Length: 151
Image (tube, rainbow, N blue to C red):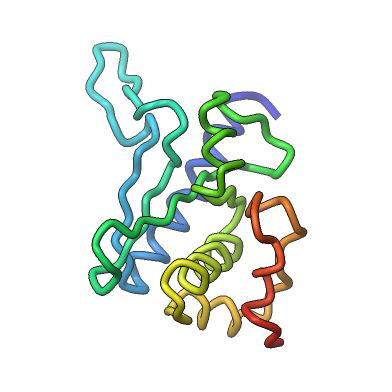
């Protein structure tokens, strides 16, 4: 796949995730280069290296709680920078390739960080999707993939 095709596919995945999470009541901030246009050549500026593509929160979450989602076209896709990979390895973001993985990742975040089963968890469980393979979406704590044993 050529770079332009990969870019378009990633943008499509990101758009689906943003629209879906917004419809579920999440607040989503886009940090990628597509979000910051304005250069004379029409390209975006992008955010700091390592910052995930999407920062997700909800008004009812405690102050400072943000889930980071790094959108990729596949789990084999290369990291854009060493900082991006380091952020993921440190457990500060999730790498997602689909709407279902984004729901799963937010469900894990809500369960581990907020000790609750939120809207994403309920939506993911209702979808009857299989959990992602360990070490693909979440670098740390892949045992959380079953939301505490239910299914």
